[in-house]
Length: 102
Image (cartoon, rainbow, N blue to C red; front, top):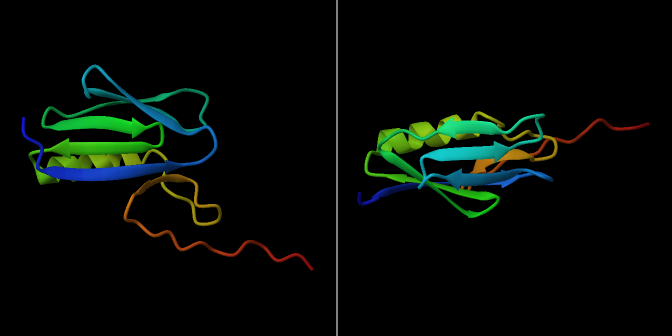
């Protein structure tokens, strides 16, 4: 399978990690929940973890690659106050200001 389309995801947060197993067919995410989130990868997509916080989704079908990347991102979308969560590498999160104390 020759990968033509890529989607990189960045995981931001203390203790947030990702690991791929069984030749890119399973993706395990530690996202601060009491359990690991396990995602099975569709047949036309492969997943690689370069670092514990960088996930690469590759494949020959652009729609399936981007659909799976969106499914991974929806497990923990980036929050606007601290910037923690799963985001695309080229995504810019506009942070909000917190409550002002008097």
